[in-house]
Amino acid sequence: MRDSELAISIRALTKFYNNLQALDKIAFEVKRGDFFAFLGPNGAGKTTTINVLTGLSNYQSGEVKVFGYDVTAEYLHSRRLIGLCAQESNFDPFLSIYQLLVYQAEYFGIPPWEAKRRANELLERFGLEEKRNAKHRALSGGMKKRLLLCRALIHDPEILILDEPTSGCDLELKFLIWDYLLQLNKEGKTIFLTTHYMEEAEKLCKTIGIINNGKIVRIGDKKQILQDKSLQDVFLEITGIE
Amino acid sequence: MIHQVTNPIGVMALAKREIHRFFSVANQTIFPPLVSSALFMYIFGIAVGSRVNFSAMGLTYLQFIIPGLMAMHLISSAYENTSSSLFIGRWHNHIQEILLAPLSYIEMVLGLLAGGVARGMLVCLGIWLVSLFFTPGSIIHPLALIYFMLMITVIFSCAGMMGALWAEDFGMLSMWNTYVIIPLALLGGVFHPISLLLPGLQIISHFNPLYYMVSGIRYSMTNVTDTPVATCAIVSLGMAAAVFTATVYLFKIGYKLRT
Image (cartoon, rainbow over the protein chains, first blue to last red):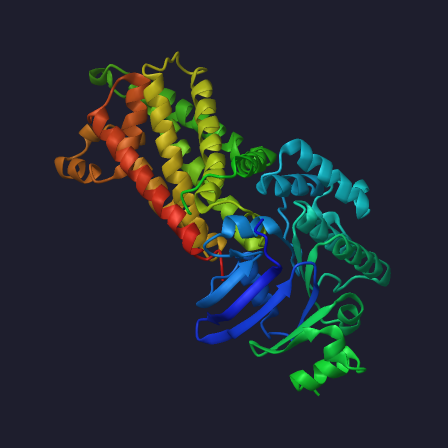
């Protein structure tokens, strides 16, 4: 890994879906070790930004780097460093959840014996041990969320990108995920979180970026942005939502 | 960058997953071609074939169609494996598991290809074993057989991936196999020697690339061919190189894989 102080560096990123401009020359940076909340209304460009970072979307212009590696030209390096916890469950229907995790680790070049050890460890950590031989369709919504998190963590990424990780979770699971994310961040992992729950962003994050209509409208340290207001009030004020 | 192979563990994992997938639905992937081939061998090879005079080629009709059946199922098994795997991956969106991984585009194609090659070869071997119940058989040129099996499975595994990327629904997915590949394979001499056709149709058959593949398998099994085996080998290699390159290119540009 390059000795970059920036986990994410995006400059003048522009993305169109046919004639629809999803991202309009957005630029921002996320420091290594930060806990970054990326907020915005539906359709603002959050998931598109994540897709560009992870290589799931092409883009028309701009520069996107993860720990100094260009996500297009040096994608083999950048992808090793990213763990993505997607918004919706998208698992291979032919595999048990244990097999899913083992294969996922091996795709990242982790030898089979180590992949199995990590899969066992994560299944235990997230209370999925008893379901190890089940297919993902047999899991509850909360269990699927946990499995998404396990899959994102299986290769021990430097940056964890979470696209609404607690949507649809009950309080117990939400607190479990929050605690785990805070612990990971304390251990030095960079965390990039999108969420519609303002209290989640306010509680967990150090830095906040707000995107609206494909443009970054506010970015900075949480304290600077809040200034004694609640994040919800700031968010509504900036995005103009009434 | 697209030509790098830097993650052998990742490629092996993808290949293992593809093989795991078709074994887990063996009732749909392995056994049907064996059953249908056994029926073809009995009905066409024994019931009808015993009345067909094939002595000029030095083979019985049954011995003639066995390599044809092997070639036909090599083609369809390889195509169906990669096309269904990749299309279902797109459909369920679990293709992201691969797209997020540090696999080069050539590695992604190689991993998916491995499933098609393995399934095609397994089915082909099964059909040959089934044929031993009907007629004693030997493989005259085993290395040539491996070569042609490899070329055919590579070509149609790649074709399957291209079909899976192009298709928007399951109907479109099966369209290529139903309307293009199987008809070309049947017209390529699975059940008949080209020399039996009218002169004009013989010329047209030479423009059918699958004819060279069926002929290559038949030569490998029986030493009988109605076209030079070197031509079959070159056409197969050329097609394999072309479709493999095209498939890697489609992965590189993210055709229907990346938004």
